[in-house]
Amino acid sequence: VLELDISLKAANLQIKNGENFKIETNSKYISINHENEKVEITEQEHSWFSIDTNARLIITMPNPSILNEITINGGVGKIDIDSLKGNKLDLNLDAGKLDCSNLEIYEKAVINGGSGGTKIMGGTLNDLALTMDVGKMTLKSSLTGNSNISCGVGDTDITLIGVKDNYKINVKKALGTFKIASESVKDGQTYGN
Image (cartoon, rainbow, N blue to C red):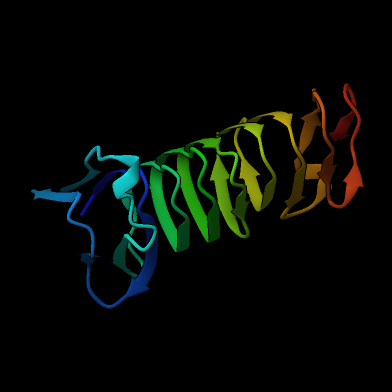
C-alpha cells in the first residue's frame, strides 16, 4: 500500500503496527476500497441518532511501512496512532481527539487540529503547516524544513527534539498559552536562531 485515504464521521480509528497489512471494522457504515496500491476508507453519512460510539476502524501496518500519501479526515471519534510514516500527510480533525505516539513525515505535513485535542509525542515533521483553531495541542517532535504553526484559542505546548540552534520560530498568537520547551512564549517573540 502506497496511499491511504480515510474519511470518518463518528467511528474511532486505531492505526497500529503488526506483521501484515490488515483492515478491520465493526461498523456497517464503513466502506473499504482497496485498488492497486491505494486504500480508500469512507464512513457513510448516517443519522446522529444511529451513531454507535463503539464503532471502530483498526488498521494494522507492517513496520517499517512508508506510505507516499496519507489523508485522514476525522470526525467526532478518537484517533489513536502507534506509529505512522509517509512522505505527505493531510490530517483534518473535527471534534475528535488525536493521540499519536510517533509520526514521521518526510516531505510535507498539513495538520488541522480539532477541538477534541491533538497530541503527537514523537517523530519528525518536514514542512509542517499546523492550524489549531480551538483545543489543546501537544507536540513533541523534530521539525525540519519551513514550518508554519497557527493557533487560535486554546493551549499549545511544543517540545522540539534537537538543539535550540536548529530552530528559529517567530511567534504570533491569539488567546491562550503558547509554550516551547516548557517556556511561555509571547506574541511577537522569536525563539531560537
